[in-house]
Image (cartoon, rainbow over all chains, first blue to last red):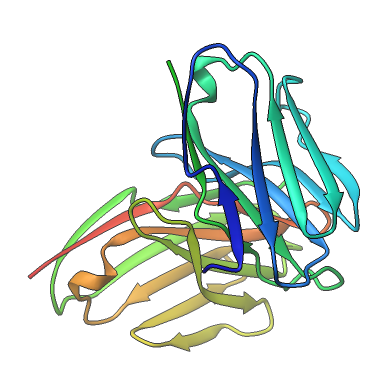
Length: 113
Length: 112
């Protein structure tokens, strides 16, 4: 699926600030960040539904999402922690119907030293 | 909220055999269900979406059964082949229908 692009693909960090980027060319108006730790299922972090943010309250405050327009999604991470090592997937869907499938990007693999 | 359990966590089968993965959910009002396949280093690809009004759903090389009474969703890979080796996740629509809650995943290995 090349219609949802994420960058970078791989990220290795010490305690630094960094942003992950996602862009979708599907005309969807809901975008998501999911975190997948090793050998675990994807877990919802944030969702923008028609640009309204809904957050999973268990996500640490050092993660800050941004949705500059309906096709772009950013995830700003400040002072990463080793527990943040995971693959971060961006996803999108068309809103309006609960049965609409999610389309996933290829993910950004974050490794925290 | 909804909770989804999936079993088994690992499944090894020989080519041509069948493989069954079962998900159990908790919310009796859940209405939309999905199966996703994740190959190594890749994102998740949709295999099938299932509505609670349909109990048997057939895809290419697999069948999905929904048992609403027991709140179970199963994926049956028929005549598995090495290309089926992947991690499989069930998912249930949650967050007011706006997002998905995933099961714990099943790693399927198909040997020739």
